[in-house]
Image (cartoon, rainbow, N blue to C red; front, side, top):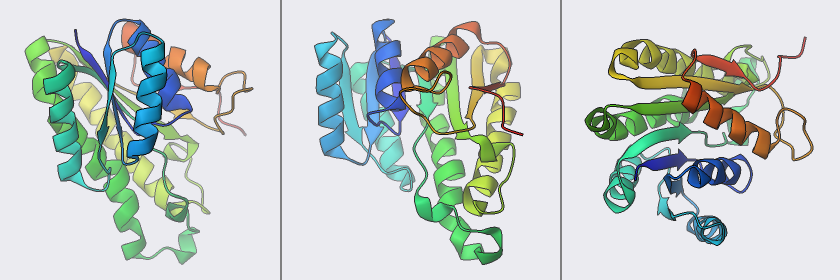
Length: 221
């Protein structure tokens, strides 16, 4: 059995995606800095008959990410699918004219160093399997920067560039890197951006392995 590792586990999209991959037969490794939330999520997944465990780590602490993903692979099986989708902090979204160089340290650690650390942690296992999927989930500022959200606009663009390079470099090894852009808010009642719909979309991206960038819905004009 292989593992679906979710970095940024939460009760919305994270839980829905964990449920979708878990019902497909994968073990589920939930990574979050909130241990209490992890206990609640793993209990809910266990109620669905899904083998899941939580692992505490902070995406701003690379060593904790490496440890969490290594422990997850040892406990549950090699990571075949990695989803990187933590929610950015509100203070990342300063207006561009109020953003200094130091204000970019945390957003870039969050959206660049975090993903790089996670990929380096799971890539050897994917290579041993001979297959793998790397899923990156970003907001609309990844492709359309917003002057009132400078931190995420800059950091998401950098994450997008990294993910795109992985897509090209790893394709010959049967490891598929893809990005899902969610332009608006994730809401239970949204036609295209509810947690359940997005979870199905991410699973379909994993299975189809078709192209790099996907959109949950068109970007607003």
